[in-house]
Image (tube, rainbow, N blue to C red):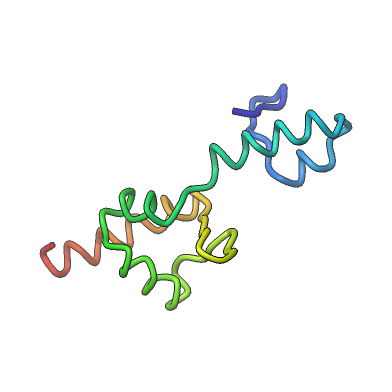
Length: 96
């Protein structure tokens, strides 16, 4: 993971604006993507729902893809985890 001296994880803006070499920025961006972005399949596993449910959540605007090129749909893990309680409450409501 990427950290500043103050202990906070770096975000994309901080990585891009940092006074680092392009090679360092590339490594930091790669680490950010590895730690912060998840695939559609990983989202379905985190939320314990089907891929069709993920498609429905996207259409409803409840989950927004971070990157959507052809079939490579990635989501911010923090967004998925933030949405997780809503999914669980719906499951509880319908006894699933």
